[in-house]
Image 1 (cartoon, helix red, strand yellow):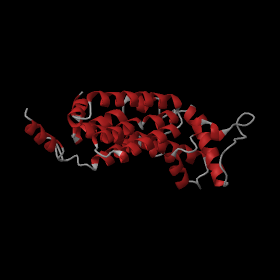
Image 2 (image 1 turned 180 degrees about the vertical axis):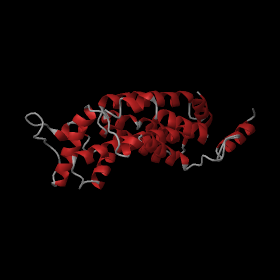
Image 3 (image 1 turned 135 degrees about the horizontal axis):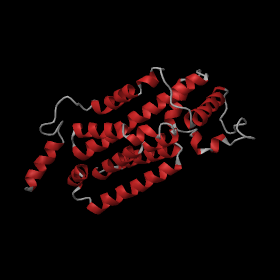
Image 4 (image 1 turned 90 degrees about the vertical axis):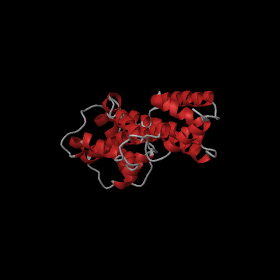
Amino acid sequence: MTVQDEQGQDAHDDRAGAPGEPAWPGRAALVWLPFALAALFYAPLLGGLRTFPRGDFTDHFLPFSLFQRSALAGGYLPVWNPYTYSGHPFLADVQAAVFYPISNLILAATLPMAQAAARLYLLQVEAAIHIALAGLFTALLVAALTRSRAAALVAGVSFAFSGYLTGYPPLQLAVLRTAVWLPAILWCVLAAWQARRGLLWWSGAGVALAVAFLAGHPQTYLLTLYALAAWLALLAAVGRHDRRRVARGIGGA
């Protein structure tokens, strides 16, 4: 293939869809479809017909949510929890995730809802939102790699509703909160690497890393850092001179 042909192929790949790709999955589908599928997948929970089984979700994260809501509704920061053992440094507990943005947005919007049943329901809503975010972030990453919306949607759905992500992490909410930010981090780094002036994308990667840190699961965050290091090493190894073709190659792999 000549350089001119490659340039033509690059331009073609940048258009709305690849040859043979159906027209129906528009760009907006990358956003709304993961949320629609998450709502469908968790319909019994969101409809109030079922709840997650008893375990850490109900015996650990629910009491944390109840205490944080009570503290904030009372107008003070939840620094110390006097109800656990002889006292518990709540703010210092990483799994309390006191400063995690998504949890705080939901909490702020539902602060008057003090009942345990309501907080349990809202925690389940938060889990469903994170499943949808996993699909969205993966779709954005794969769209940047392949220039194919169909491939992006398949990848996003496959990751979001994989056995791992829908099995253990939702019951251990801190794991789920942390894990879903990995594709967002990789996407921002890839976009920064491809951009001539990537400061905005590097900043986005930094924000995503910070949010993942605040999500409250150090082990998953450490694995995220390992994956990020491998991603950066791969991008550095292939060189900056052929970034677009490299991105397609990674997506094909």
